[in-house]
Length: 216
Picture (cartoon, rainbow, N blue to C red):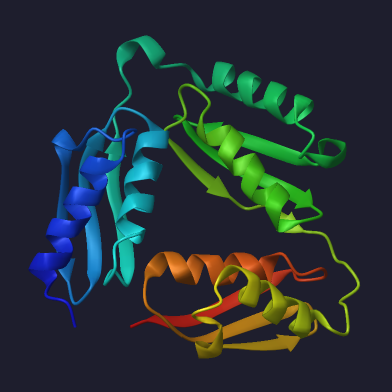
């Protein structure tokens, strides 16, 4: 197992390497491969990028996000204006079907609700909203509409895993029950687990993914 001191140093270096993040006010603590990010940044995309940077580091098993977003005065907006901007994005976005997505804003923190057809739509909507000026946090509660589950959904997931994570596919087990996929096994890095989970979400008919994959 990699020492926590080494993991901490590598996380700090990865955060420093990311051009979006100003690491000046970000601290890192580690315990048995679990990483906690503390401090503050000036935008929500910066906070998100710092967490994603930590996930990319080998040896990181979990990331606890304790970074606060302190928006500069010039980009602070009241909740009404933030909601208006999000409404325009949802209206214009080809990722949003039939205006089925709703956004609630409270003190700069956005909660998304509603239904979409595919997981990639759910992710794209989060990406759009995350970059709206004035947003300080985001909770994505979008659900997927029921779809007929393909009889060979397990094979499709396995094929996707092989295409995207060939080296790790032999260590991943996929179990399908109705529209729920359960993943187990192990990978070498946290980002690899994200790749596997993304492959599972891409299978038609999947509405829930239970991730029991361990990072070794």
